[in-house]
Length: 146
Ligand code: HEC
Image (tube, rainbow, N blue to C red; front, side, top):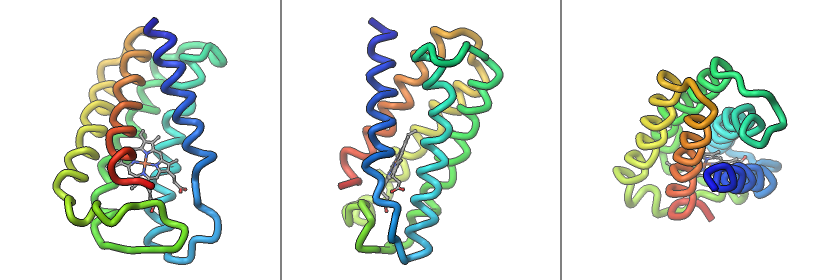
């Protein structure tokens, strides 16, 4: 069951790549925050493949990926602080009406990923941790992304 849930999460995360409206973005500030999100997404790929059984479990590689996700999450509030727009952006204007909440959601992802990057030893921990990471992405996208 845990495995099934984690696979679903990872599936949903890869769908996010297809939804990306990255092409044709003219505003460099919007491009920079999208690049940050892409890097976050890349951080999920390796551990995601481990959970799906497409790659063998490697605690060290999984911890490094979690550290990358945490580092990107730490940058997110700065990348979004100025209310920059672009016709291809999927960011909702409510971000800047509720920036403290947006920051808190980003901090939450950072906390979860950072904990994983320091404590992860087993595949079960990776599954559980990826589930938490996926939930943290979703919690923000649900409210602040088109
Ligand atoms: C604090 C809020 C927040 C968190 C947490 C968050 N995102 Fe995002 N994400 C956004 C917003 C807002 C956008 C839309 C940015 C835009 O289009 O200007 C976005 C866009 C994206 C994109 C599309 C980028 C593009 O090129 O258009 C991907 C992929 C993505 N996020 C992946 C993730 C993943 C994976 C996680 C979790 C590991 C995550 N995000 C966590 C707010 C967040």
